Length: 131
Image (tube, rainbow, N blue to C red):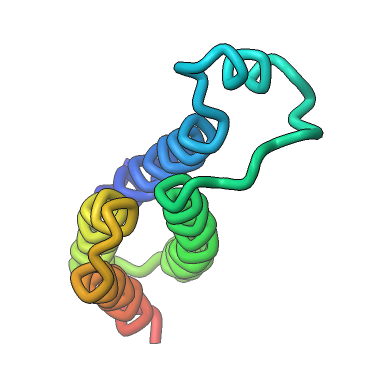
């Protein structure tokens, strides 16, 4: 497996962790009501706390950007390109996203945007290799 595909797998795993973290923060399974909610069909989910809301938005944002990463890497591999910028861009995307999540959940607005921009820079590197 190529390094860029390794980072794609890591990014997919990170997306799953983000989704699960958001679900846990929303349900609050450390309470009895939260335990019952986790075992339910989640028809009566309480509104999210501010932290849970940020975690959910970060997870949704990751899914959108992960779709872009998949599309770009598919184009790279379909074209049989061998450019080191692809692996570097995928690594940059993953590491920026890894630090993006706790920054977003903590509510650090300007640093969050900077981390997001770094991840977009990783996607741009991959796009440059395809272009």
